[in-house]
Length: 142
Image (tube, rainbow, N blue to C red):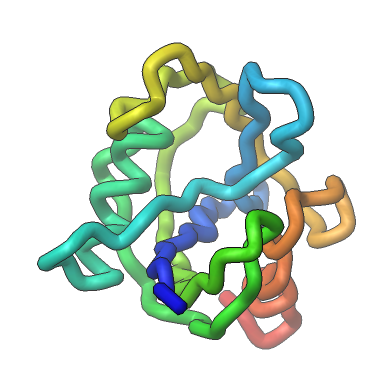
């Protein structure tokens, strides 16, 4: 069985003393609310992939990588096995919301609408996307 590597990004910022996490909705029915993520390409490390994918999916290029917060294996709804890497990245972007057309391969007519959440229970994220949010919003994180 082939394992597909995926790099996920919990992009955070501090706003009025509160930690916020970036999420998005796309113009595709049933996609759900997500965090930015993408495939680790051949010859690329997961760290390189998360930096590239965050720029492609969000348009943000001035992100600070705080570190890898988790990695695991999970079965995708398609039945494929994924090795998932979850990174914490920091942004200083002041916008409360924005739209971006992702620039990755096969993302032609997609449009993502981004906004920030302040609590792990603020929205219901797509399956697997919120698995490590508690590590961002936990009391020990700052």
